[in-house]
Amino acid sequence: MPATQSLSRAYLVLEGECHLQAGNLPESTLRAGDFLFLPGGEAHLLGSPLDAPARPFASLVRKPVAGELLPVRIGTQGPATHFVQLSFSCERHLADPLLSSLPPQVFVDLAGASALDWLTDSLGLALSSSDAPFLGAAAARSRLAELVFIEAFSRFVQSRPAGGQGWIAGLNDRYVGRALALIHGRPEESWTVEKLGRLVGLSRSALAERFAQVMGEPIFAFLTRWRLQLAAEYLLATPRPIQSIAKEAGYESAGAFSAAFKRAFRKPPSVWRRKHRRRGD
Image (cartoon, rainbow, N blue to C red; front, side, top):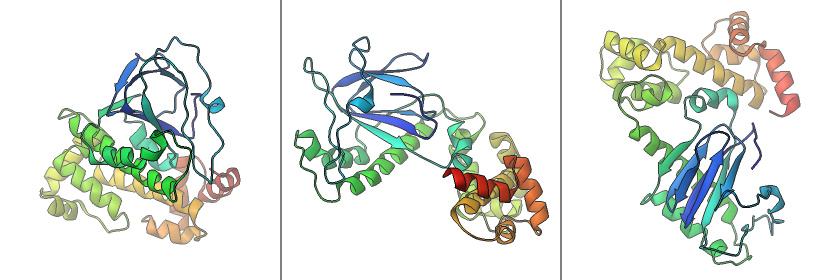
């Protein structure tokens, strides 16, 4: 698989065993139920064994039938391995803080997860070697892929040791995680540290200290950056006037918003909107 900056890739092994190697990282062995996520979209090899002659994945992909992707089969000897490749695209200006906090490879055991069973059941026809597509399969699998990713990421976060600093530590912290959920869920709210503390069950001073310790920055620095990241998305996804977006981001004037936006994204809002829309980013 070649490197890509537009996608993050993951592999989920349903049956058998295979190996994956990305860049200079150690080789990983994947067995049934294993999920491996490559957040950076690095080039990698997948196979069993890895020293077999490699073929570009793009050369194996078959023409879809009725909009449905068909199974890829390679090799005729040795035990069979069934795996699914999942590709995720995201708005980098929204996702980079989280993706950059992840290790180069996120390895999770999904054995016993309901989402894994649902996805396996949905692929039953494909894994039976039939090429007959069934109605709605692609839409259903895209939703199941999201559930698999959410389950895998949740298990990864919960498996992290206590302590540390950054996004993963924050999500895993009882109080900071709740504050993050509130800020992300209601960014337009007129938040105060006291109000957040009351909702998460800590005093104002205790939450302020804990948030800064775990996330490495004060609550309102984090909130300001998140509002600017959302503003960057609104500039691309909506025709709303900059003044309206500025007000929702917590700025009284378009000038103050423009200055803050330029510090964060190195471009004024109008230039960001024009250039990114033209490129289709």
